Image (cartoon, rainbow, N blue to C red; front, side, top):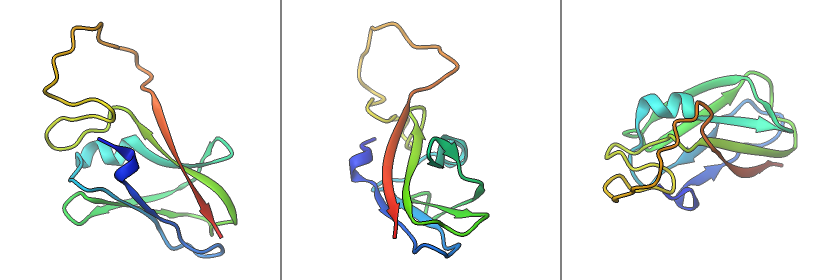
Length: 115
């Protein structure tokens, strides 16, 4: 999965409209529900997630209206597409390195701004 190919549509400040991320290919629905979230100043933003368009669109609606400023869409590197490819790692590539069994997956932060 290449996060550079994801498209983020940020809503206007003062609204509770969702921020949406669209992906070129379908991602695993179960992992989308737990491996993506929105943060501001290092703290999770409270809200609700919807997934649609055949698992190619993730939308997050905040519980409070958006404030102007910088936010991040944070993705855990365990996120997979339906073929098992993960962020930065193809499923069918032979890899004889030690498997990381850490309970704390790596995170990838994608910044976006509310105007």
